[in-house]
Picture 1: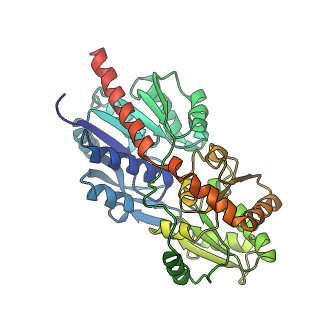
Picture 2: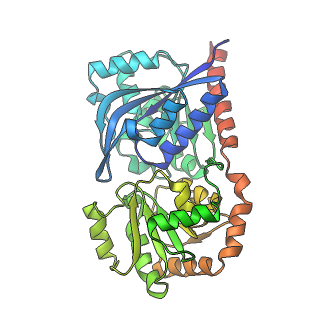
Picture 3: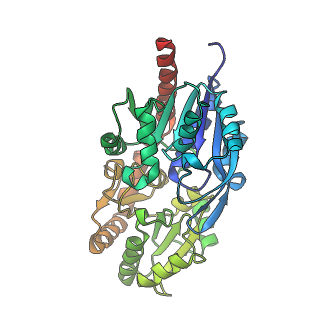
Amino acid sequence: MNRSIRVLSLYEGFFAGGARILHTDVIAGLHVGGDQQHSVLSIASAVRRESSIQHLRRDPRFVRLAGAGIEVTTLGRLGGAEAPAPSSFTDRQLRIAANVINQADVILSLKEQPLGLLLALHERGMMPDIPVAACLHRSDPEHSGEALSWLREAASTGLVTAQISCAQSTSDAYQPFLPPIAGRFVIGNGIDTDRFQPGTEVEQAATRQALGIPAAVPVVVFAARFDVMKDPGLFLRSVALHSRDRPETHYLVCGAGMTLENEAFRALAKESAISSSTNLHALGIRDDMPAVYQIADIVALTSAFGEASPLCLLEGAASGATPVTTDVGDAALTVEDIGRVTTHDLADIVATWDEVLDRRPELRSHALAARARFGRERMIAEYDAVVRGLLGSVRAVA
């Protein structure tokens, strides 16, 4: 084959989230290389999540792909909390999907949620015989709803031929639910260390001023969507307790639904004993996360379940913050030598925050010294090898 390998990625939709950030990073990096030609099929053109509607064309991931010359096709649906079932697709949507899929050599499904579309095409005899890899990003498959059964069916019938997990905890968690798959890979996450790096004093001062944060006071950042998986209530209760002894500290919450406009967030903050004197900044979705991380002393994660290899821990550490996380998925491995792991006990979390703030210069140097291991180059190279291997296995059989 003299032409580039044509790789199609399936997205449930475009919305804020680590898996979409990571996969977009991967395919943009592979597309730039020239040996692979990437495109995207998005089932939804807008998604209702965490009390907001997020539109495809306004999403930074879409903007980045378009800027890289990667074609994005959408079926034009409105996405929601539940993934679209195979029976929900119209004839017109299936024809659009089939036309796009028939131009691909390899398919990468971003998580299991888009697989209902491939099953629908398969049932109609409209699905070509090409390699399909499910790219998995959770450590709790049982919380995927019906999509887990679609993944199991697709793997059992040979429609899905490979599984790419972003963490060992993800691969282990899905193993009991899937039949043996010849292609089973673990590719650890990486980030753009040119984008996430320590800011200059001038840059940090400008960000603090823009957010109304005095110079030199401690900053704790919580970058997560408003979702039970992330346990924002545990974070807010920790803030309420921590701020009693360190009232000068500022706490930033960033992510979908993390705004005072979200009634559920306001109610949870009140229930968690957040007072008017607490320096809590509910920032919602931000497109300037590198600047936010640059002023952080701590990047905190209090997730209850589901995490695999959280990007916020890497992004924060690459910017100089110390990651402090609960032990979920591969989070503890991610912060080894550069951060702290806590239980879900309030007193433990608060004590750990205090310890990190008291040792701030030392722990910041540990995070920055480890920046080289956070880079995305290794991740992109491993994806490149897997894609080539999937196509090569098909040729060998033929």
